[in-house]
Amino acid sequence: MLKDKLKKTFSNNDGNNKRKIENTVVFVIILIITIVAINYIMNGDTKKGSNEIPEAENRNDVVQVDSKTTTDENEEKLANILSNIEGVGKVKVLLTYSQTSTYVPIYNENTKESNTTETDSTGGTRTIEETDSQKEVVYEEDESGKKEPVTQSIISPKIEGAIITAQGANDANVKTNIIQAVEAATGLATHKIQVFKMSE
Image (cartoon, rainbow, N blue to C red; front, side, top):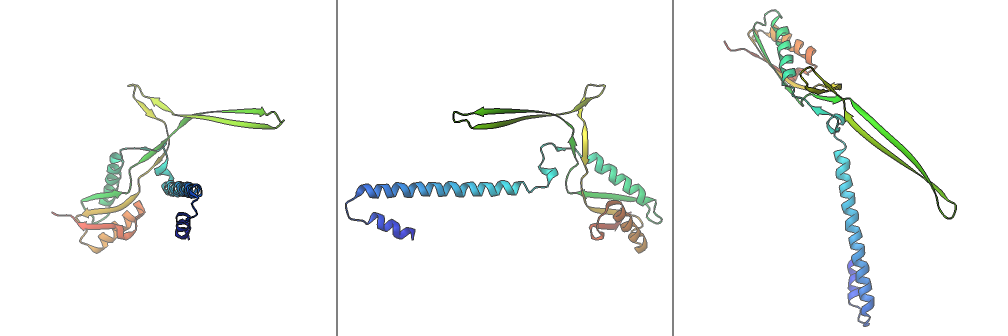
């Protein structure tokens, strides 16, 4: 349909060049508007997709924390518990995580609101509302002068899997006890817990 209209516009031999130019200009304007609209829609979909990231990962007020200390402590605690189970013997634990620990700091937030009412020459009025918001992280200072953000909440890393090596893992009952203990402590499904006999 568009192709036929273009042919009709440019093959019209009535000598009216002005009409052809007007039609061409209108066509170009419509084409530009269409391209801009498509670009706007595509960018809107991209932004919408990026907003579907889980809230904790998408917020500016979430701060990544080095979780090595936390993970080492968790592995050590779990190894201590497992080594106390009868028949387990020496044990080593490796936990894998899906993300690092994050914490949400507390903010001082100052919000200023102002309302302005304007009256035009015809007697109509309109009210303009303006809101200005500022956020600052709250810090506490220790005796050495080091500043640390005050934490509102901590988002712990999610455990994805566990590998355990134990001296007594060749015994089926001991292996079952280890799996049940790790399952209870971590909330992992059984298939995400692997238990092996420790090498001598």
